[in-house]
Length: 212
Image (cartoon, rainbow, N blue to C red; front, side):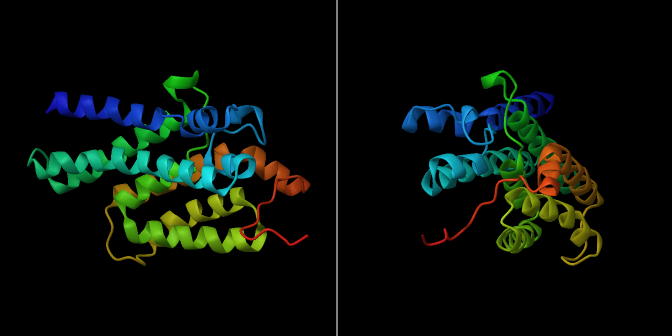
């Protein structure tokens, strides 16, 4: 059992550490995404610099990293190695390691992205209904403000709020505590974006580009 948990922990971190934006940019566009746009190695900057196709691929893979890492706990549950409550705890633990991997990837000198897409994948595996609600909240805020960063922060903050209010029925307390922690983490990693929003210098993005 200890061997399983240790192995899955390492695997979760390594999954999160896959620098999708960097590898994709180098492989298909011969550029280092960190030297363009905001300099962030994530999906948003990939959308901005390389376009919708590249951004969509990076977003999907980064979310998949979090989803797969979190789902590793289900393997132990279906193998009858842990009960459901322990499974939920391990889901949070493995998913969090994937997020840490994305923030501090071993494959590129521990300098990664902001972890929003990987967090989304984790939440989809942990609580699909709440994840879909968060996506809807993100899209509404983004459509109104055109700030990806603001949409990400508002969605992450409202995620534990919705769970606390019981919108989706009874929820394991550990998931709510995790949601609060993630909200704080997302806001912290976007602290410079907050400064730029107040200064009016934050980059805007548009789902439908304005016609020239």
